Image (tube, rainbow, N blue to C red; front, side, top):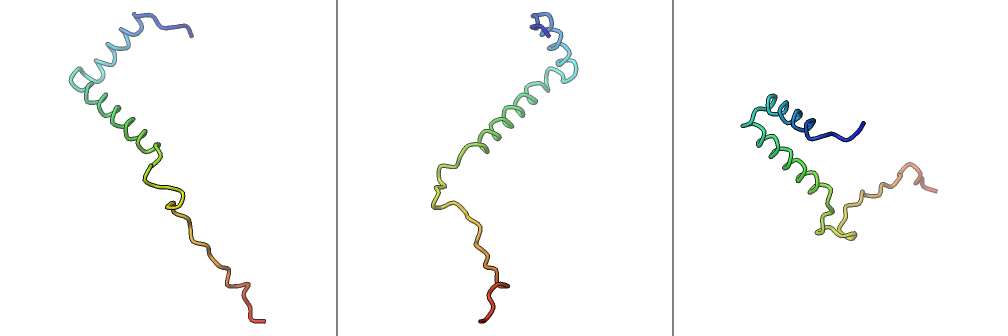
Length: 69
């Protein structure tokens, strides 16, 4: 797999324009960009939450082991 020349990219661009149409292509790219932004936002750490404020599951006591002696 060598590098692609300019002619390869022109052919790919023409096929993409035929499939999606010139008017629909900016909308598709905008949706892709908003998806990437949402993904990055979800992956970022929330600075408002600290270790002390983090949610920890409650500790469950095993009541079966507590027998009156």
